[in-house]
Image (tube, rainbow, N blue to C red; front, side, top):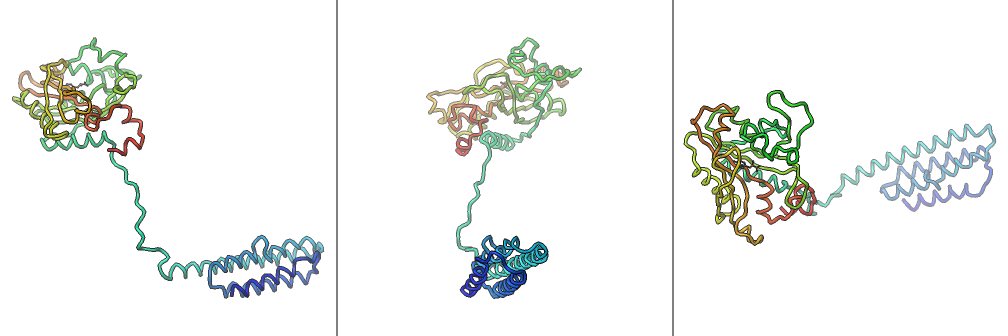
Length: 363
Ligand code: DAH
């Protein structure tokens, strides 16, 4: 079939090849013949490849109908519109016939036999995963949930009162200095003072105690901000998780037991925890928590300072309106980047926010 069509086309094409001026009737007749032959060839065509060739030979750039259209210029002026119209009709008719045939043949090809090899293995999509810091947050929250802690949230844009005053942090404390803290350029709140990007998650303690009466057992994961120049260990933004437990007769023993349990769960059962006396305005006594863990061996250090904690200062209870001497409680603040760096021996805090996939893929 393909052979017959080719012959046909060659004949039609060659009949146009050299004649510079064709009489009107001759060109019209050629167009009619071309149309009839092409339509027959298209109708008889049974495969897509042959159809592509038919298309080229009739309406392609070198095709018979195109050649006829090019000859229009040689016709007397008065004949041009009529023959031009016919040539266009032929072209449109053949274009439509070719398209219809193509659709028919494609439908047939799709319906006959498996064009898709269903035995081939599928193409895998790369599935992403959680950011290492999100993973630490989720694991930390899961461990505290098992101990009966709820999750609390607070705003990143805080007021000075929630961030400092209510936490027994006096106006001349370095944490409040413009050198250390990012203040927000908004008119101050009449009651709670200037707006600051929270420097720690501790204001969530205050917000929680203002809302609820003890017993309180919460953790508050979130982002914090400080006026720091970025280097391997400093970043103007990082993450913390705050813990707060307030009830009757809560003791340092509860604090130490909880912190120890947490780190053994998160890192490994042979992790050791040490409390070192320290000072925080909102806790009394206050401690820094040091860890000793096989994870630290690569750093050549036995103990690493990891977090702060202590017994809630009575002045904090006073600020939130709890009655005198009725409750005791403890609080802690852990740095999430710090924990991730220990866990995975990461040596530069900037890696967490650079979002280099080669780094992120490793966790
Ligand atoms: N807010 C402290 C910081 O950002 C961490 C901290 C220390 C939180 C002691 C506490 C705490 O709740 O009791 O460094």
